[in-house]
View 1 (cartoon, rainbow, N blue to C red):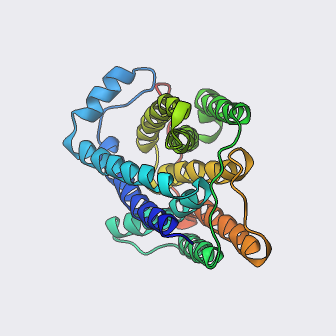
View 2: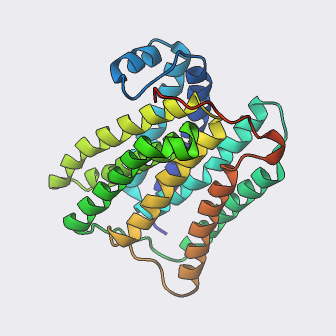
Length: 287
């Protein structure tokens, strides 16, 4: 593994921790604000920007993103996103500590799987060389367009079926994944710098949806689902549309185990423990 790749993965780990702690700060701030709505973006933005507690969380998230962007310039997308998916363990521990409670068995299992995935990812890199891919423009645009379509459908109809917290978390994560993939493309330079526009759109929409979700559910559910979508899609995109090759032989098998472990761990961490299931949330006509 090259020094560049190692530096990128270290930055990705620090970024993941900072962003997940920022999610908790934003959740607590947004939960105390008047109702936010994607139908009233300017009014909602004013409420958020006028709250110093939320601004602190957003500043932390922005710092984490800058580290993430540098990480993407140094390491392949699929590897950086695997580190990000494992970062949900930080969110679980931090949320439990802030609530002064112990992790439930399902949460502990999710944390252990996430850590196992990160260890397996490190093992798969030993003695190998992570290679970058670029991919063709057509499949990339098709992937991003399909992701945006699914996210919009979730915003429109998913809330009634799964609730505001779940729909907003997943849709926000899908938009974040658009931003993440666009960030990687923009760091490739040349004409692909234009993907910076999609970067801004993806992150703006994702941030707005997360704040709406925060007012309807707990941080680990909303941010956890967002983190799952944010990382699972780019992990797949790295191989499918950016042509980032998997290593062969044993290292390739271990890499697949790593991807599966971090994603499965994230899924478990988004589940509501039975002993603490909240009362069904009220339907919101505003979000």
